[in-house]
Image 1 (cartoon, rainbow, N blue to C red):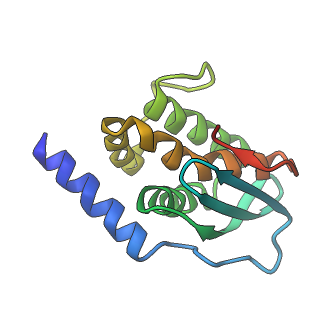
Image 2: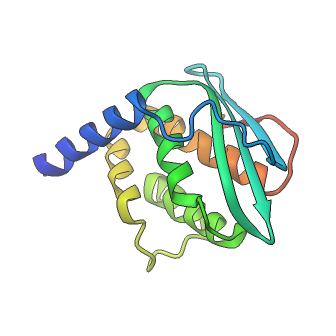
Length: 151
C-alpha cells in the first residue's frame, strides 16, 4: 500500500510542478468551458479542439491546488486523440473511481495510469479538487457556457 501512496504522491507532485498542456489555448480551439470550486478557489478553463468527433488538441489554464492542477494535467493527456464519446466514458470512469457514484461508468474499463488519482479518496475533502477539471472538460464537450462548479 505504501508503494501506491508513494506513486500517488510522486505523480501528483510531478504533474503539479510540470503540468502538461497548461496555459495552452489551442489556436483552433472550438469548445471551451470554465469552472470554479468556491471552497478552495480552484479556477480552470479547458479549451478543446474537436474535429470529426475527435479531440485533436486540448489545453487548460487557471489556478488550483496541487491535486486539481495534477488532475487537470493528467486529464489532458488521457483525452488527447480520443473521440468525444471515449472522453465522456473516461470522465465517467474517473468520476466513479473517485466518488463511487455514477451510473454511466463502465467499471469493466481500466482507467490506466489515471488509477493513481484513486489516492485522492483518502482525502474526501479533496475529491472535488480532483474532479473539477473533469467536469469542466465534460461541459466543454457539450458546448455548455454555464460556469461549472463542484458544489
